[in-house]
Length: 456
View 1 (cartoon, one colour):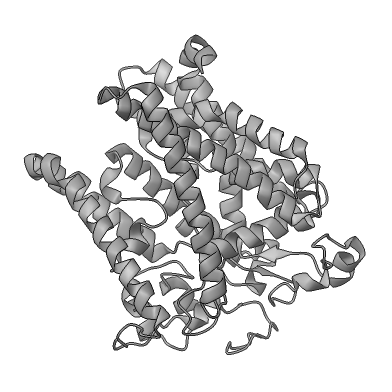
View 2 (view 1 turned 180 degrees about the vertical axis):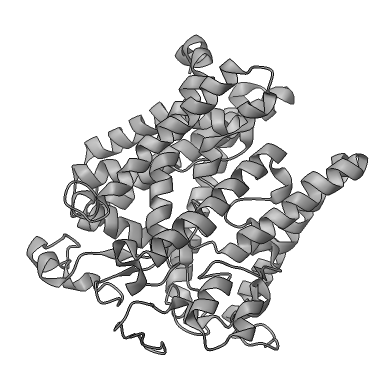
């Protein structure tokens, strides 16, 4: 089925070229000529393309194109951070020789970093796209705060009053989520995009408790969960207000629902881990690879295990990525100044740097083919259909989106039930993947990797 989830024509044509497959791969490269035929892979990371405002789609496209086709390729081909020793686009972490990072070499059984072992082994490296995306993440954090205080700050002052981890870590996590709830809520309410707390949580605990990845991921989980539950509760309360449901009844149902959902997730996760063979193991033919879990694990090692002081500032080779924090402040300030100087030009206020800088937040594991298919669907329904058949769009667009989501969910349950009985999908012509295996090969001279050509 993977060959239908991502279709990459360039890889079919140039089967022996590393550079061509980097250009054409929809999951590990630039995705030129690739697309996805699977609704779940299109919406699974960033939501339905029919639910976004048109200006948000344009801003998101600008951020994606800038990162995927300008910033990351330039950084890769100029060999920034020794980029050619590693894949162009990957969610994994590597040592200096381009091999998967052996975490057991630097962490003891208690998952605490051994600084001497780390010094003797290797610095930690990641693909150039992951590095540049992290820079965009820094910019996204500062640009969100700057954008909020410039464009919505006066409203916040008016209405603001109405609203393995140590104990202090949990309290700080809740405090951070509470502080950022208003700016992130404003962004969510105006453009429909929920910004992540992962980066700021990882950064805070990475500097506070370096060398402890489990504490880091626990802190981040508390930050993100607090923010998500708070925003969801607020949105549900608003819906309940419109439906004239008493606030106390609404709150009681929310509490019961949250307890039921969290309990179900815990038991389902434990059942899956104990029942599914090779779950979250990356091997050929395995459908249970858990890309999001792999991303969280690697980020916990980078921020919590190795620590930002060794990877970023003050001692790491990726230190200059923090300059994106300054860029994130400058962007909204320019838009704010221009919008005040030229108030008659309404399009200026539609330039939204929080969307631009967070356009590639889920990449990787989300690939170029997925997001290109997202934009194709978005432009078909939110631009062409909306402009030519507005009546049909207003009545049926959201119903169609919900129907596709429901159908995908039902099929997902059926697929899992069959897979647990060792009944898998039809073997389609073209193989079980997108045929872009060489897209993960390094291009630096002398780097040896299995099933990859060596450049000299």
